[in-house]
Image (cartoon, rainbow, N blue to C red):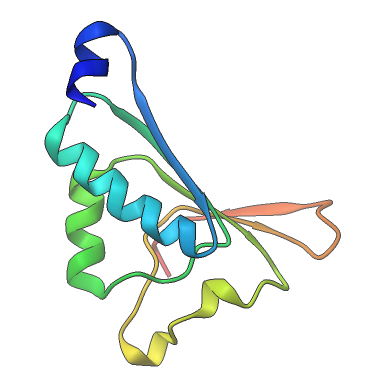
Length: 110
């Protein structure tokens, strides 16, 4: 990545993934934000599972500023692992209704 960013100095980085790949892309975004703090622009995930507890999510949000999670109302994956186990999502969630005709943008206010 360092070689590519040297070759293309105006480039920015975007991390994305679906389902388990969405969770992995959050870990990737964190690594990129630490290694190249001015280059990571956005992280988009689709149907991402929960990846950590409150402390981890706080640390992630300090390092990765623009996280967007797209969720469909019938998708079971975003509810895993269970909230009761201490896992939570980072904000912001874009929540689509059943037929994708409407969405709500949710922040982390609860």
